[in-house]
Length: 240
Ligand code: NAD
Ligand code: ZN
Image (cartoon, rainbow, N blue to C red):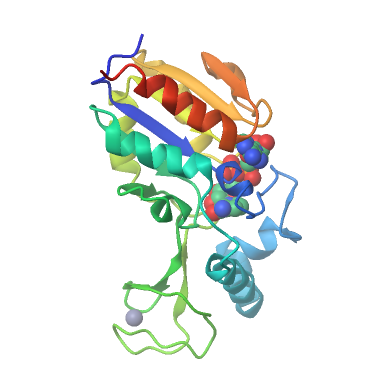
């Protein structure tokens, strides 16, 4: 039984944005928008063919500007939970899109970075970046030309905010993973860490059982836009 003051930790993946029209990335051998992950989402790919990698992320960034790409009921329900739950709610997302923010979520921990930011490989500055990036892009902080890359975490790079996440994994009393396949580490290992602390109930909400579904206490299978609002309503019914 979850008390209304209990700290809640939510982990989201590409599946929560699928019904908003953003393609997921399907598991180890899968493709992301028709590309092998090794060709577009690794530091080696960027070193080998920066133009291809920039083009890939330029297209992903352009999708965010498409008026048809909007937060769905699952993003909105989580924002409502953050605003209403009496205890702390932490949202960690593997997504690089900004749909949680656009749904009104205030504190979003982007462990894999953000599409709408550019990072400078010359001076390390991060800048808000909504348009395309290419070899002629100039860093607003140090004026270097051609040194900007998408501020996203590629496979083989270290995710962001791991210290804060480790604290939340230890402290939460309810851990919920939504729309994530459980194949990308370290995020896939979060549920096992939570279970090792022994404090929290763990729930997976996903279209199908993920690779780590057996580690969770409870699994609900179906579309995030239906199951997440229903789960949030259940929780909020406990708040008097
Ligand atoms: P994934 O694509 O590996 O897995 C998505 C999971 O969501 C699958 O298990 C699938 O069954 C489930 N799913 C699909 N549609 C769903 C729905 N409507 N409701 C509920 N579940 C649904 O995603 P991942 O585990 O997040 O790993 C992908 C990696 O690629 C991440 O590191 C992420 O940074 C990146 N990525 C990000 C985006 C994005 O920002 N929107 C999109 C694709 C990939
Ligand atoms: Zn710079």
